Image (cartoon, rainbow, N blue to C red):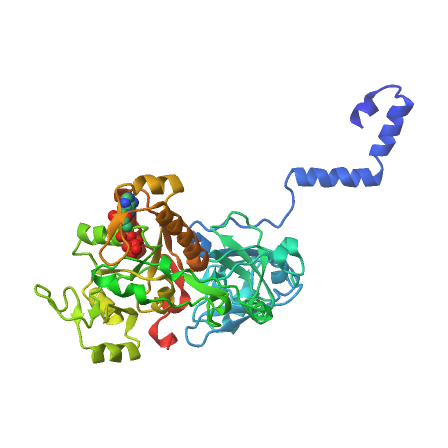
Amino acid sequence: MTVIQTVPRPSAEAQELHNLLSSPHIQALLSSQDSVAQLDYGPVLPPLPDEMPENEEAMRIVCLVKNNQPLGATIKRDEETGEIYIARVIHGGLADRSGLLHPGDLLVEVNGNPVVGLEPEQVIQILINSQGTILFKVIPNTVYMRAMVDYCPLQDSSIPCPDAGMAFSRGDLLEVVDQSDGRWWQARKLPCTVSCAGLIPSASMLKGKQREQWWCQPLQVHTCIRPSGFRRSFRLWRSYRRRRQSCTSCSPNSSALSTPYEEVALYQRPPQENHRLIILIGASGVGVTELRKRLIKLNPSSYQGPVPHTTRPIRAGERTGREYHFVTKELFEYMVCNHRFVEYGEYKGHLYGTSTDAIDEVLKRGRMCIIDVEPHSIQPLRTRKLKPFVIFIKPPNSDRLRQTRREARIITNYTVNRAFTEDDFVELEEVSLLIEAKYKQFFDGVLVNDDLQDTCMRLCSVIQEAQNEPQWMPVSWTQSDNMFH
Ligand SMILES: Nc1ncnc2c1ncn2[C@@H]1O[C@H](COP(=O)(O)OP(=O)(O)OP(=O)(O)O)[C@@H](O)[C@H]1O
C-alpha cells in the first residue's frame, strides 16, 4: 500500500490492489497474521519447574490457565493414606478439555503446595487463591497389564471401529491409559513407539468372548504337546519325568479360559528378600540340563538345584538330603495329597518328585534356586512367595542346531546314549515352537542356545538382572501383606 501511494499515477490494477488491501477484512487478516508472527498472544504459561522428578514418566505436570469457568473436576481423599485423588472429571469442563486430568490420578502438588494429608476443602482453597495459571503435579492413574491372550481387531466383529483397534499377542506389555468405558479400553503397547493409544476390549468383554468361543466350538482343538516331546532323559533327579503324560490344554480351566490380562508393576527385589526362583523351560534336548549343570558348576555357592524326593532304596555312597531325600512310599503319598510336589512321577516302580520345601530350603540359604520343569508346571509355581522368573531356552536356526550338536549325545531311553538323529532335530524344533506358542505369556526371558559357553554367560547375566534390577511382575506379588490375604 505504501509503495502504491508513492507512485504518482498508479495504474487501474494498482488502484484496485490498494482498495482490496484497505478493505476491513483484509486489514483484520493482516493484523491477526502479525500478532501470531510476533507470538503476541497470551496468557503465557510459566516454564516447567527446574527440579523435574527423577522418574519423569511417572509424574505428569499439568498447567491450566484459569478463566471464569470452574475447573470441572472433583477430588476425594483416601482416608487411610491421606492421599488426594481426582474423583471425577466433568464432561466438557476445563479439566476434561485439557485431556490431562483423569479419574484416579493422584494429586501430588498444586502450585507448588504438597497436598498429601490436606483436607479436600484446603486443596480447593489453594485453587481459589491462585491467579492466572494453576500448576498441578499428578501421578497418572496408568495401569500396566500383560496380555495373556491374543487379540486382533480386524477379526472382531463387535469392535466399534476396527481401524482404531490395537492388535496384541500373549506376553505383550500394555499400558492401559483409559478404562472409563466398561467395554472398550484404550492402551499402548510397551516399549511405546507410537503416542496414539488404540482400542482394546476390556477384561470382562474379552472373558465373555472367550466363554462364547469355548462353548460354541463343537470339538476343542487338541493343542497339547506330545508327551514324547518333553524331557526324555532318565538322569538322576529327573528320571521320574517320563511318566507324566497329562494333557492340560484341553480341560476347561486351561489358558483358553484364564484371565485375559494380568495387571503388572515394576518391582525391585529388596536385598534382604529371598532370591526369585529361576525356572528354565525348553524342549527336550535343547540343552536345559546342560546349562543348569554348567551354571551350578560355575558358582556353586550362588546357584543350586532343589534336592528331589524318592522312594527308591538308598545306595552305597549316597546320603539322604544330598542326592535325594529318601522317604517311604507312605510319606511320599502323604506329600502328594498335601500338594507338596511341583512335579512327581514313577520310574521303575519308584516314586520321584521335586517338592516346594526343597525349593524353599535353597532359597532360605540365600542361594538362587534353578529348576527346570515341564511348561504346564509353571502356573502352580507362580506365587507371590517364589516370584518365579521364567527363561525359555530356544534352539538356534536349523543349520546352527545341526552344526553345534554334531558331537552332542542325547539320552533317550534308560541308559542309551547316542548322537542326535535328523528326527530328533525335527522334533526338537517342532516342540520348541509349540511350547513357545502355548506358554510365551509366562516367559520373562528368552535365550537362544547356540554356542554353549556363550549361552551360559548370557544366562548368568539374565539371572543377575532378574534378581537385582526392576522387573515387571503381577501386581499381586508386589503388594504388602496387609493388603493381600
Ligand atoms: N549349545 C550347545 N551346543 C552343543 N551341544 C549342546 C548345546 N546345548 C546342549 N548340548 C548337548 O545336547 C545334549 C542334550 O542336552 P541336555 O541334556 O541339556 O538336554 P535337555 O534340554 O535337558 O533335554 P532332556 O531333558 O531330554 O535331556 C547334551 O549332550 C548337551 O551337552
